Amino acid sequence: MPALGMSHVAFCVRDMAKSLAFYQEALGFRVLHDRRQETTTGGLPHVHKHRRATRRQVTLAYGEGDTRPQLVMTEHPGEPPDGEPIKLDQIGISHVSFTVPSVARLAQQLLAKGYQTAGPPGAFQDQSCQSAHDHSDHAAPASCGSSSRQCSLIHRRN
Image (tube, rainbow, N blue to C red; front, side, top):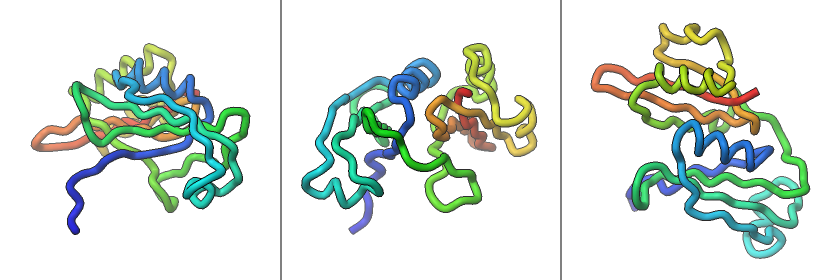
């Protein structure tokens, strides 16, 4: 059966409040759902590396209506997360990319708000890409597409 589209991308964050602030302030995402869920029953114990009691799950969307894919962020209140964010040469999803009208303008706005790039602000221009970091240590790139090129911006706040 062929896929009809992408539903969502889910990732665990270190600090939900800081991650929500980033996605809402920097990229204009809106919260669709914010819920707490028991993780000790059903299939959930089988998809966690560690035994967890609960999780907070926030679903974010961009634009108007039921836009897809959506972002689903998870946090385990009162329990430390496990692991470190991965780099591009490691197994796993290293980033998710968003289309924005201007990557250069977004980079300027993020720098003005205190976000730091992973390298000098102009270091990735040859690859049409810019990298930075958020408080939850996950990559959330933005891309500016045109018919002739695509560029990326990965943001994390230090």
